[in-house]
Image (cartoon, rainbow, N blue to C red; front, side):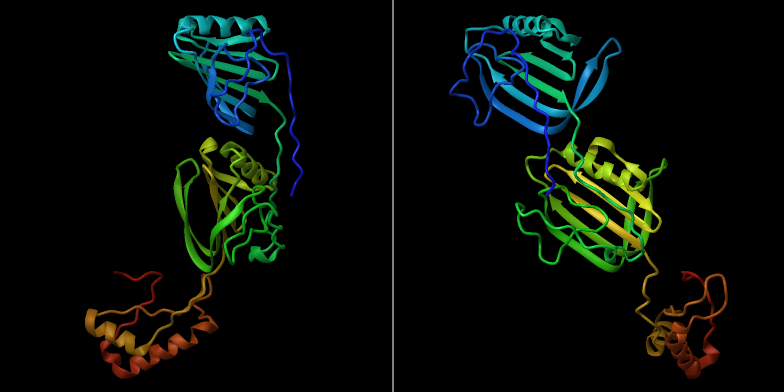
Amino acid sequence: MKTRYFIAMASLAIGIPVTRAQSRDAAGCQDSKEIARFPGSYISQCKDQADDLITFDNIGPKKESKRIEGELHHADYSLPTNSANKAQVVATLHSALTKAGYTLVYDSGDYGDFTGIKGKTWISEGVHGGGYSQTIMTEIALAQWVTAKPAETADGFAVAQAPAKPVEAPPDAKGCKDSPLIERFPDSFIGGCNNKSDEKHNFENLGPKKETKTLEGELHQVTYTYPNTASKAQVVRNLNTALRLAGYTFLSDSGDYGEFTVNRGKTWISEEVHGGGYVQTVMFETTLTQDVTANAAAMSNGITTSGHTVVNGILFDTGKADLKPESASAMKEVVKLLQRGAELIRVEVTEDPPW
């Protein structure tokens, strides 16, 4: 388990008369140290994340959007009934921010939405009839816990031992383990997995044309649940950064949406992050095993019923007409078929069936 470090930031509360927390505050919610609540208000709900992503809109003269990642404190306040109006709340909060030295980078005026910035601290207030929402984001150096590495051989899962599962996490699904190529997000657990030595998988939205590529080979798919103390943005950034640092090429990346596919040599990895968990797919391109070979009786039946049949298991060297040794059993079945009625059969060699 990696040790986590968080930067604590404290400042004097902005000049609104200090009021005590109300007994009606939602469980676990409290005021930010950056700004006191409007007198008599109570917190109906809140969200605190040590590592999250917020987009502040309508910033500056060009009305741009600014994505900020860091320590988040959000609270929804309900105003005291019949003791304060919207204009009073807007004026009080607005004045408090400007007096404390915050630069207003967005201000809707009487509408009641405004955003201020001071150093690395962003404060956004949205006042409406009956309450207001307060979002405070402190930009900090965020922790990168997940690491990844390139596969050194095509059989990937033999490269290294899977990292140990954190002690605090629930037990992993039976028979499932991490890929040695990329660590799990800390304190996550495996809810299910799918391991196939010989499988096909579609990787979608690749490249500028958003193409789909179907690959065959060794497939390992793991479904993780990450801790509720983590944000989706935190998980996305950790997985994304780990793969970039390991030298993988990004063929698709949906950004904040949380889906991306990378490639390095014959190794393909895709991550699909959603609220509460993520699915990781690792594919090693290999030559698939030809398990089904020709059978004289089955071929004869195919010719009788449909006028044609497919002969599986006849393999050639690449770019040559030389048969591979593993084609011997299929060729024996073809000989048996020809011996039964050669005058009725025409043999044609094609890469794919002509029907």
